[in-house]
Amino acid sequence: MSVVNISIGQLVASNAGRDQTNIYLVVGTLQNKYLLLADGRERKLSNPKQKNIRHVKVFKSIAQVVADKIQSGMKITDEEIRQAIKVLYKPDNL
Amino acid sequence: MIILKSEREINYLRDAGRIVAETHIEVTKAVKPGVTTLELDRIAEEYIKGRGAIPSFKGYHGFSGNICSSVNEEVVHGIPGLRMLKTGDNVSIDIGAVINGYNGDAAITVPVGEIDAEVQKLLDVTEESLYKGIEQAIIGNRLSDISHAVQSHVEQYGFGVVRDYVGHGIGRSMHEDPQIPNYGSPGRGPRLKAGMTLAIEPMINLGTHEVKTLDDGWTVVTLDGKRSAHFEHSIAITDGKPEILTKL
Image 1: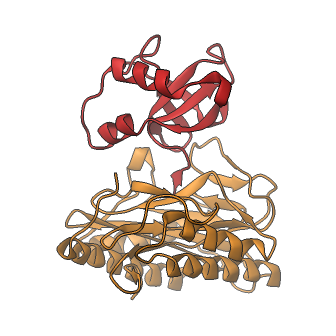
Image 2: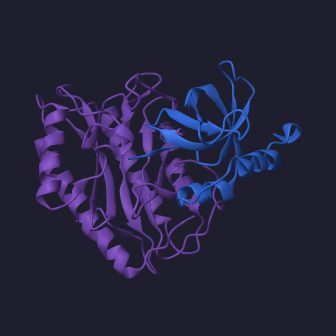
Image 3: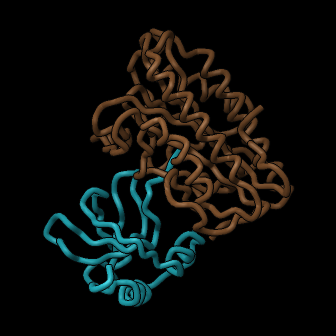
């Protein structure tokens, strides 16, 4: 069974809906159609945003530390999500 | 994080792979005009359970089938149902089984009766591209050498390589790192090491590479409605040639 070509920890931007232009990290997938997104601010890990894969723009950057932690079942914090987005998201070189 | 497997773990993966391969033979035997994909699903379920394993797709993120059965323009993740196969169809059967905690995962696309020469060519090229990819799974190569081998073989025939879905590592989980795209330039990504176990799975379309997901949340179809094929093996990278785990 194949997997969606988006990794946990990948940086995405919403391009549809009321949260348009918001930047998130992928923290999970639902079936193979929806992503679970968090930014550590308005969307915390406790209540990730569920969003159709088609409604996001996918960036190449992946927060590897966050991805490894999620995949190995370790706890991550909203602070780590905020930090990772801060490091990865540089509007001028995307 | 890519998990390297010990010889003992690879032995478990061989067991799982063998069950998947045997199930494929059973299911393929049953593919003929008039059979529904749900019947194929039942055959697979019975066989896998009879061998003491568990079908790994059932319940995966809520997937309701024991296998994925994708007919004609369906690329992957088709849900078994009452759709009846007819002469000229091609059906992709994707099977996963877990035994002793280790997974096997493989897929083939089977023609139903006589099919168009064009579609047969698509099936042949897709299967060849899988083996081209596997050939590159040797120590010292990089991950994208596999991807590049698949893409370059397929595109010389003008077929489309699906981008939105990719292969994956396999082991105690059905889906592990790394992701294995079927396209890309060579010489990129992690270096391949002995003990890596991968599921390589080219999904190839007759027309455009673009796909969409149907409202059931699972079934992926080609955007232009043209046929698609899917072949997959789980392999282990060894000191010599790659070992195909899901082949008898």
